[in-house]
Amino acid sequence: MKNLVSKLFIFVLLILIAVSAVGCSAAAATPAASAEQAAVMPQRGGPGGSSTFASVAPTHKDLAYADLSAAQKLDLYLPTTGTGPFPVVVMVHGGGFMFGDKADGGGLTGVDTLLAAGYAVASINYRLSGEAQYPAQIFDAKAAVRFLRANAAQYNLNPEKFGAWGASAGGNLVSLLGTTCGAAELEGAELGNADQSSCVQAVVDWFGPIDFLKMQAQLTEAGCSASTDEASSPESKLMGADIQTIPDQVALTNPMNYISAEDAPFFIENGTADCNIPPVQNKNLAEALSAAIGAEKVTYVSLEGAGHGGSQFETAENLKLVVDFLDKYLK
Image (cartoon, rainbow, N blue to C red; front, side, top):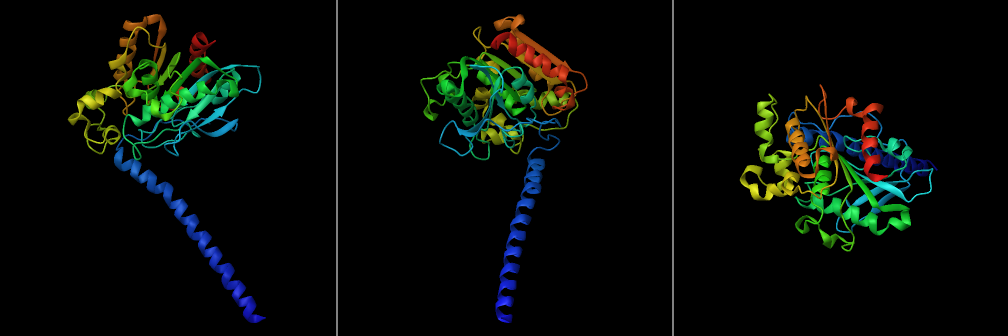
């Protein structure tokens, strides 16, 4: 009997040790990721923000919009009131193309606000630069839009009313969604639903990087110490090489290179104290779009004293500006 008790005790002890080891490994994973982020993004943490991305669970979680990567999933939130079909806002998280997740928005907020206003919300993941280099990220964003259109009837969505809202890296991707409608080289049609359009009818760009090749000079001029030209920068990691050595490839990431008179209306917002993405990047985008599609279709807001995201973007007043803009073009 004593031997049996001893064996049981040892067995339970071994289980507890194993569980503890797994827990320690999991706990260590987050600091390791943070250390990596700090190493590759000196003085350039991810987008700020403290508000809850969404207070409700997705109506449909982890919908696979393509099958090439486990990252190609989205969460779909549907309004609990109204009959639909609902206009859609595709939300694209930030994180330097290296980090972030559809569940936390990566610098975004406002799911609750959008649902209350009668919008369906699709928060997407996409392949990060540690898995795949550009243009995989815009391929994924476009594939997600095509998937949602292909399945609009199933999810009670309005296929003619799609908006896109992104922060930081996500701001770059939604800006490309708004300016590259019909650009075959950035479509990634092989990911599925090639018969569907990836065009969007409205874009909300929160402090997205626009012209990678000019960022370093603009940051230096603004008195910011961040570096974008080094091989370890998020931009270079995205491209797989020091960006200044491959200007032709980097040009494919710049929404300004695709602007035309047919582009979607834009709401563009940045903080004046942003030392991650020079505010002039978004100002220049707004001016170029205004010249092409008309100033009445472009809203540019510069938040005095705001940095790379944060509470000033998340106020009810500011979120109302975003929703009012979306209402104008999606309802």
